[in-house]
Amino acid sequence: NGSSALAYAAVAGHLDVIRALSRHGADLDTAGDGGQAALVSAALVKKWPSLQLLVELGARLEVRDPSNRTALMIAAMHGHSKTVSSLLERRAMLEARASDGSTALVVAAK
Image (cartoon, helix red, strand yellow):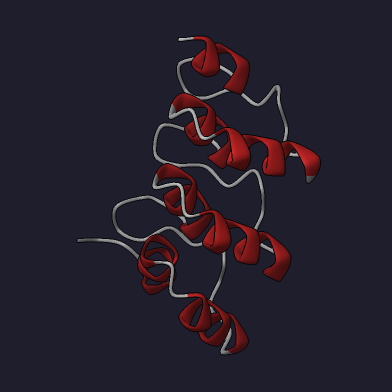
């Protein structure tokens, strides 16, 4: 489906696979052919444990999807309050803008 192995593991919640891929040098921020990095994929499907582990392993909070949206924007757009709170606690950029100019605050308000 174009996802990287890491993104697939994140969406499926396979924490041991995420750890193993990271240990063997997988780039935590690389997007698969579909354009989504593991952190963005985890935020999209509300996989809190995967997202938390990726951040702990060093995934960049500001990695973007093909529409230039961050994991924070994706989580806000889908009403994932726990994920939003966690990303903000870790200092995700609230003022980051997507390709259409929207921020996490704008998408949360929609």
